[in-house]
Length: 390
Image 1: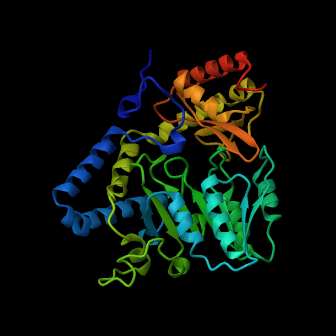
Image 2: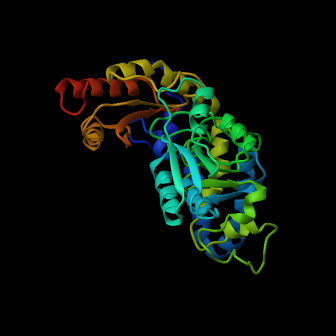
Image 3: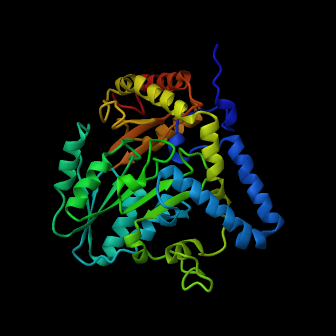
């Protein structure tokens, strides 16, 4: 019997079938050891760490991240999560009453709420353009999205990989079309780093945010915000502190504003090189290939069990290491609770407008038996005729 070569590198509970890497990731043991070492160094000499040594570590970490996602380290700042970045940029834009932000109806709920809050207070419109599912091809997607563009459109906000529907969206073609219309694009790439290749410079988005604590496997609370150089002076800090009109300014006002914003434990940011080393040392690209293969090999069975269908063609263009299908249930929260408490399966069951989706996400430590356990549980629940409708 083959032994999974990756499982022992994680702290995950052996008594739980873990099919939800997409929500918060999981830290490998070697990365956690580096994390603890930074925290201990900070506590041994907190003043010098926070004001001196830690700042040098942060520059090293940002450089490693910038090399990995292919951008200038001067164009990124570290933030705790993508929601922080979305709030920072949304609240900085000089929107006026009547202006519109165009998006899809597939976006992450927390981001929808941010834009709705900002637009409502200004009198602007957050336009959620309906996208037909299943996706057919990139051209059809772009056509549907841009049907929502008008003279009032100031920005397109779009996920690179969606959350509830787990779809890779053709953001390259969206950006290309938007540039021809002189419209800025803000990409929410929360699920992208460590999941699919990312070249921010080549992509050409005006704004981009991504999580390092999901598929990159850095500690929780480690993400980045990218802003194109021409827009950096317009993006104001969410927290105004010592970085504003800094007494000892760095070479970048943008970095000062968004880095020097009060005391916090920033050691999670410093672990990015360790996370990248782990992926390199343990051939994580290969683990990703095997994970994608498992995702796709089980997709039709997953959909069939639930009398549902796949949301896009099962190709690299639309599907990575996650897969969602619509599930018919009137009690998604109870279904989730049943799966974790009775069957010991960690998997999200998520509401999205008037639909509910169930999503499995696969990483190197997962095996076919994990999905078999899920399928057996779903069949058992369906046979009882209470929580899932077929």
